[in-house]
Length: 45
Image (tube, rainbow, N blue to C red; front, side, top):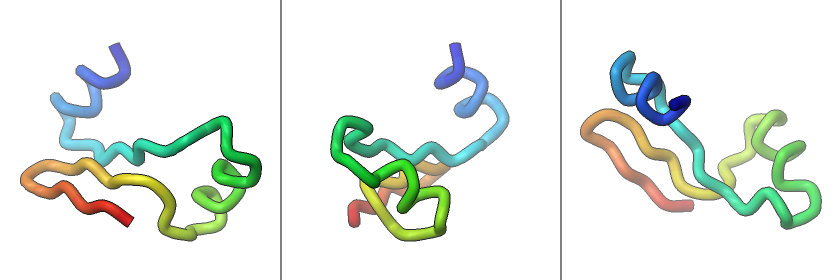
């Protein structure tokens, strides 16, 4: 799965509410939205 590949290759994942209007655009624009999950790091915004 995509999650397994991200874990195997230490690729960070952003978990966010896709149903909230504008969230995807905000993430692509570099705005901090949702929760970043990375190796040895979990941060909530």
